[in-house]
Length: 484
Image (cartoon, rainbow, N blue to C red; front, top):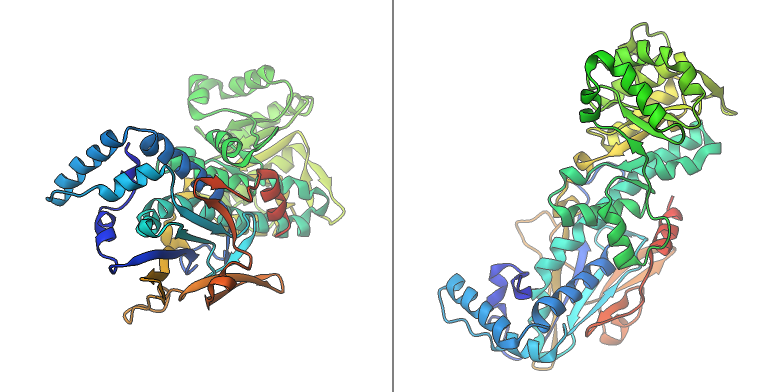
């Protein structure tokens, strides 16, 4: 696709609408509100900028600058002439093609840090006066691509904080487990491949477990990821269990353990009757499971996640399988140990994972109720799926890219928006901006001078086709770990 189509239709006329003599348009990307974010997500993780601008630069090189000017500009002329019902003039596009690169300077806060709401994370400005229109021509594609990796990374961090809080309370000797306690199950429910990749990369800055395989390529391509990136385990799906037949489900379990005599094996267990699996089949298979060199993980994925894992009864005096729940039933059969903090930890040969309709609220409730029943929170892994990562929009953190400064005929104008009909969320910064660190917190300073704008925490990552201050996955993960 012609790279000039990567924008909103109304952008195609804005080069004619700015005041005559416009030489510069300066914009910033800012999270404006967290009122639609999950509880506890009070800040935004900075992540995805390097990915987005590397992708954008490569796309313009491959689908605009490297194509013959007459061909690519004639194509856009024909499309926009039909689209707008006019004889569209493409001379500004032809001039851009002659230049051979995107004439913008992009400054960003470091990736892997947390940013308070209403603090700019990225600034974009044109570097050549005649291309003033480029800054906000790119707003749409930047907005499309930036909000999701930042949102998913931010929500993943909320999950990890929940897991750490309860691991400290119930199994503090096993804190490394939380790196794998949130597992990405979201790919099939995301809004397309690119969404799955960008969200999956966001998840993988926080957690080491994921079934979103394309995230591996993304992290190697855009963040120089080396060696181990993310991991998973051998696991079944319902078609496997169905193919083994309902009448011989226990035989399917046995055959799977013979196929995988060691390592972690996850078996979906609610294809028919989860409670029969837990109270009839697993006791029969107990010795085989305990003699296996690895862990058998039981995976239910239907019903209320909190009740299924923890039981409908909030104490240890439940009688039915439903009242006890998965973890208590596994304890009844396989036992385990009591750790130094006095909480039950399942035998290392058995475990549980739940990966359907998980939210941060349900994750908190699961950990809380396991604690209340005397079980460690580390007895379960949660699969975080599209119910978490796809049920978001740009408005989850109120992201927007807005111009706050222009230069017209050599005169700088501080501009801003502040709709009288809005509740204040849409009010923008004003003029050039700088972000400082004050007592470890990122703070916006707007209406600064050109000299002051060059200072602060925002650093150039892209300018006129060149990249600067690049970062790798290991560095991002290290920074995020320091946030816990």
